[in-house]
Image (tube, rainbow, N blue to C red):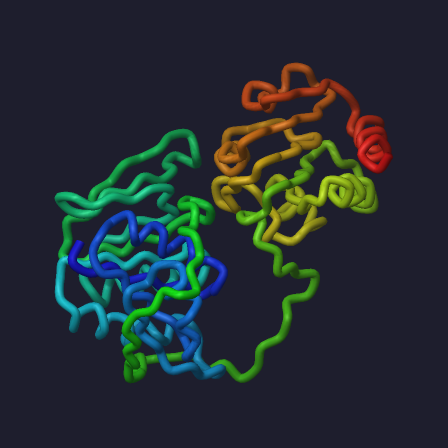
Length: 308
């Protein structure tokens, strides 16, 4: 590719996006809101285009500005965006603005005759491979799809400042408030995860799960019903095909049946240890280590052993 652009509404996603961009070859231009360009250079950007920061703007308001930058630089080009809710909204709008093909939640990307990406299809039952042959390709990358390049603070590059192009219609942000019962954790970057499923009987029983996670120096994750059905944990902690896809060194699955929709998110873990009282639970087909037992007996015992 002659030009690769990278954009994220979450600063923590730039390192892996830049690694994906580097795999395509060519010039890598990071679109950054504000003037902090050092981090993007340290992870491999050759150019940083600074977009004017304004707290009253929504992320989607930057689409005309990004589109102008991409168009002015020429084609062929690819725009890699983090597969967050905001990122996908930006991708959709860019697809229209640039007459570009869009692929969401890609787990890999490569160049050639067009841009080819793989992503889950049929609710996680299969992996699809698609090639975008339009002059510009827009790809949203799933969390953990690429391992960041080694950080090098000595890396430098060119800095360009872009003029803001206002959208035809916009929503003005009057105030920002922290979401109640929300978490800033990025499960996709956790090296150890203790994840809980339907085997948990009550919300107050999360205390024993958190105790085990603390003993393992791990983050707490969950299956979809715990986050979106019971609302016992934040959605940011949900692992699955429409949640987070993890790359942890250790994934402890407690009371999780192991349906494909969950395992799509968990299968990237290097080691999976499962505890379930049903010896026929599908999770044991994926687990490296499995224990048939009641989590209400197993979890406290594991915690006690780890704390010795």
